[in-house]
Amino acid sequence: MSLRHRCLPLLPLLALAAACTSPTASSSSSNEPPMARSTVSRAPASSVPAADLAAAVAANNAFAVDLYARVRAGAQPGNLFTSPLSASLALTMTYAGARGATAAEMASALHLGGAPDAIFQGQNALDQALGGRAAAALASDTQVAREGGAPAPSATDYDLHVVNSVWGEQTYPWAQPFLDTMATDYGTGVYLEDFLHQPDAARVTINDWVSQQTSDKINDLLPQDSIDGTTRMVLVNAIHLKLPWQSTFPASATQDGPFTRADGSKVNASMMSQEQTFGYVDDGAAQIVSLPLAGGQETVLIALPHGDLATYEASLASGSAALHPPSSEALVDLSLPRVTFTSPTFSLAKALHAMGMVQAFDPSAANFTGLCPRTPDGVNLYVSDVLQKAMLGMQETGVEAAAATAVIVAGSAAAVPPPTPVLMVVDRPYVVSIVDVPTGAVLFLGHIEDPTQTGS
Image 1 (cartoon, helix red, strand yellow):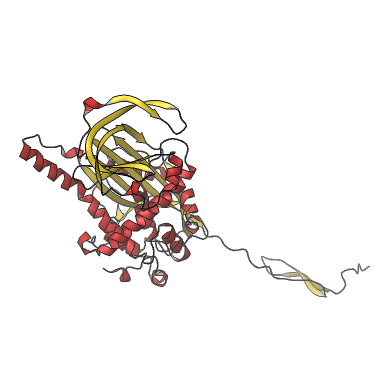
Image 2 (cartoon, rainbow, N blue to C red):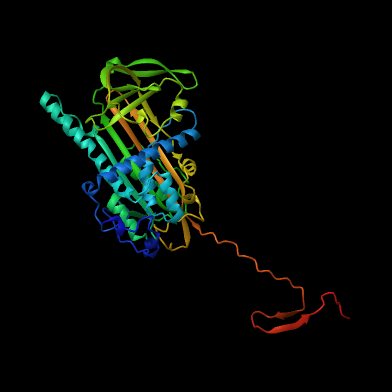
């Protein structure tokens, strides 16, 4: 089905004309809530033009650098680890329901460029491409092990998947074009939850889903009280990566060593070491090494600035060497600290505001009629917050990283503009009456020609 016929964000006339159809509820198992889902199948990645995939990657990368700069500016000292892709996927799902100026602002903040509707197909192709990486890596390593007579690698060490879910208020008739987009490009429907009466139960259900999808690496994405009776929808993306290094670090080479923090203080770190030929470049600003993971389709880039970290990060752009595997190689004697870090849940709202996504957060001005043109309780839908949590683990054998992002859509009574006052200057004779309202009986009637006259 083409975008032309799917009533997407930048087609407001079609969106307003579309009825907010009653979703068909279904459930794939007794343990899952019912789901409003489209009958449209997910589009295969092979059907997506290469240009749409390339455009989505370019938009996501530009968004990544922009978002990271804004988040970093407001972050506390210490580790910072984010997943801009997870945020982009969750936000583009939300963008599918935006209209008018709200959609335009979101398209700009998401760096969607001149053909914003193509983002849906591009994200679909990227999502599915990433979903095949781990299986290909496992197959390759299994073949190598078989040929070398080594034990087969464990399948549990190979995982890279990207999953999306949408959770909506069960009494809402979610718009069919939105459901079609979720099915075609994000592989999901809308799980129906009782946000009105049991918001915390819905929060726990969503958190459990995220934990399951990230192998318990991202827990409690939605903190207590982040979901309440005003919540109408939560759009979630989760990413989990677990892959061995292509060249593992010998455990026997790991030794404690000093690590100097940004404030100049020192800590003792477990430093992994190996000497290997890696992709490497020194661009004058930093040493940059590329550490490929199993299968060679994913790599970890380490950029070590020659100067201070803050100055280096301030210069990051989507074309920076720190974000692109070097084309040159060198024999590198590498020492790299072990890392196990999980961020707290943090809000992206302030960063997105700074990027120009303002109207979406405005309870009275936000336009998400693409989600449901006429809400049954008469509220206006808006984004109340965007939350993310991420983790990174690097050890001798490999890397594990996970993240989840939730866009929380709440409902607020639509603001009614104050009426324009009618000017009435009683500066001439007037009629006055006193009436019994229940019966309509006129009790008194007269007129005033001179308000200063007191009579007898």
